[in-house]
Length: 270
Image (cartoon, rainbow, N blue to C red; front, side, top):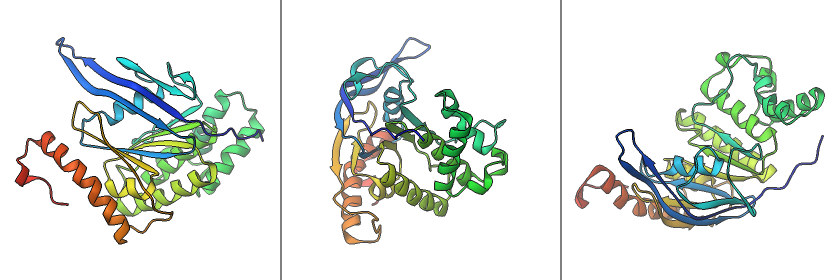
């Protein structure tokens, strides 16, 4: 098999986005943001619904152009999608006409990897997510959690430098979500890809991340960047874990109040 490339870092400089609606109205989705993300770092974005988390991820993936500013991988500007940047969506995005292993092989085939090698790579990653025995199944034969494991295997199989994950576990039940968090953490620790992860779950962000970026209500900007100084695996029942949760909820409460137009004494309880 070919050598596995090293992870790359990300840089954002004055990155913002304003959309024009069909009625001609301008909607500011994202205010200028700046951050450096180190190679191999796991960074999560949390914030109220509609705060620009997914917009930012789509800019970084090359799906959407920023209104101004620049995003870079190393020293290279992001101007379009690239197979060096993988993406995992909330809705799995598997091809229903392909088998499980063909879905994982898809990106490898586009990269020109030979049939025998791509089959071996695909089986390796299906083994990593515990689905090697389901290689010949069709997506409709899998549960939601299994489909997302296929999507994760597909994203990692092409050996991208960076992987973007847009609420990948948001539609799953609590037990499946915890199981996949553990699997993702294991894969990330083994392969050390740079990951930018969007989630609405503060507990999930603290469980997985090196750093957490708290975003404001729309138009989104970076309100706080919090480094999580806990070793993996993390015990969500520990006092240290709870301290980080409370700190992030404190940052979010004001923004949630803006989103729902609540008075201060009606803010959500922690």
